[in-house]
Length: 118
Image (cartoon, rainbow, N blue to C red; front, side, top):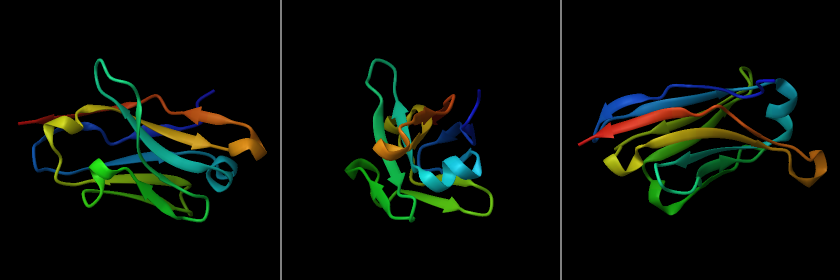
């Protein structure tokens, strides 16, 4: 069962921008901390940014000032706006929905490839 549908990846030159989207159901969207993770070849999956059900964002240091996570409550969609992209940002990006201990689920999207050329 597909619960998170991602889109927006692609190939971009260094310094360029991309916007990733993650659409889900209303119940998952409303009850989850939504996040974006990434995994580069040979590396572990790592957190990039997340946003609480109430809309509070959190960013890891290496994307602060370059990436922005946001929510559209009307569309049940989370976005990751990525600016000033660097070749080091090349990875498969995954959307995540964390229901916490209260709801007890943790869902992943299928992943979308982001490639930044130098």
